[in-house]
Length: 180
Image (cartoon, rainbow, N blue to C red):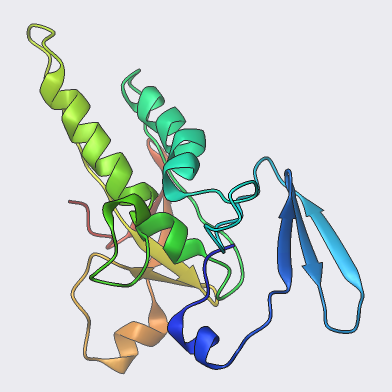
């Protein structure tokens, strides 16, 4: 759970999502409660509650460091954030949408990128070279959007989205997805 954004603070929004261990709990105003169990549940709403708070560094250590280790073992890696609108996916992946945010608020993607290039730079294995490629996409309402592509002015391109295809040799891919 991410911290409230400015709009939510101004509206005096109430917290309805809680974390206990690896459970995520939804408490509605009517008093009913639903529990969901995951591998990890991170509560990042209020850093003043130290016993419950999971900062971006802790999230990176649990998830990003495993990805980084596997990349250096030669595996490809994917990172997926799934959840409903406003649940904290963008906050977890990138950090707050605030130019004044501190370094400790950086999300998994900037932390993973920095660690990846730092580790590659510091590797003194003779003859070792690295090739890094990445794509960044969003799937929303069953439409795939390339988040690295410049905004397209045409409504037609926005409505259609990108298509998933399958190559018999290499497997599934997103047609037209930019790779940097």
